[in-house]
Length: 523
Image 1: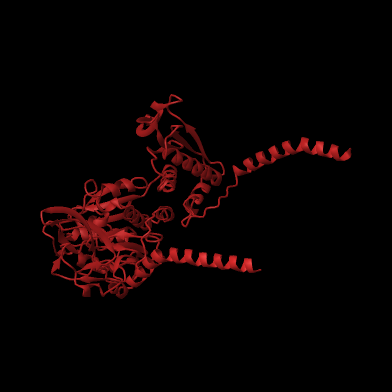
Image 2: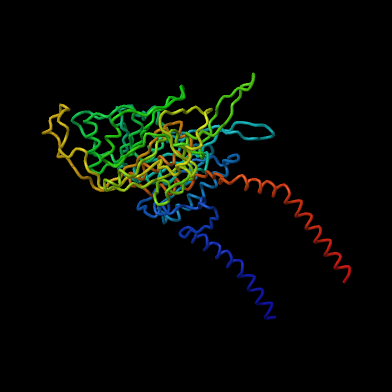
């Protein structure tokens, strides 16, 4: 009787107790978050940088997720992934990040979404065995005090964490750093050749063109100055302005093509300007040569065989694919491959002689080298095998230390400027940073089609402006997985193992099974 009574009491209390445990676990989940992520780069959990950003929020950030509820595949999976990430941000923010899900069509809030800059888009959906176009919304809006930041369309989860963290950082930062792009010396144009990089940078920085005029120094509100592929010499006043920008703690990114190329004529020649002389006092020297590498990008060439013309993809050693990155430098950390078309190697000895530290960011492969003029860059001309015997050329480097001014006696006197109106010349900089790359082509729009190249360029600017936390978020989502090079002998071994291995295993298994049955019969 007592046993039955105990069973009855347990049955009555078990269900409420279970419900209470489930409710308690869900309440704790609002404030304590854990996840087991078995991916190599932890792609399905927030990085330490994003966690720190969420934890640093002092005031509420409101996120409005304007998403159509019934999205077709694969966009419905993207929506679930986005919700999971927002829940994780909220958990680490201690409730300071708040969000709501809005279906603009069902809630009659389409005008609100479009007014924020979130447009409707058309996606294909299969209904009743027919392919139809459906109007959907897939955008995010971030609000903080009187500021807002918009992600108009989320069509992929690639780099989604970076975009969310960037939006939170941008909307919560009162004054954004300014990145300037030098012009006036044949550089690539910010609004013509560098549109992809400009649009990416504008998510985090104020971006503008810098044109120098005699008597005016570079504005002190510019944190980083990018010099994107100058083709003409630099005047003496411009040299002084850039010099003093560096002396006052400004950061430089110098992308210089030491070798000029004419792709139509398939020729190249050493560029003749005064940039090498100007850059030498800061420890930067590009060798007058082109790096050739057997680990390289493939290009499409038009070939003809008889009366048939066809496109063929061939490896082009003048476009090295860097896969060796310095893990001690955040710019290249976690990257796997960056393409550098027609890159000149850097010489590290000059920086050492000036007491500066030149830290390589990436190198060419073991099967690489360099060639000097005269150059023949035709893809149909085979490169001399002896040219690949100088491995590990420095393709990009960071120079750090206290730089000495190239103008120790003050501003140049032959520029027609009233020297009395200029501030005092600084002859020794505070600890500074410069990034030097012997190629500007990787950063133009065509080169930035590669996600790795785009990430590399953004990492350079982040590192120079010391916004290093975002580098760890962006770099880990670059998912290029190049195959390791193996010898011809190893290839043959793998081939024969695949062909003969399975039949041999089946035969051995049959023999073992046959012998087992024979022994069983005898016993």
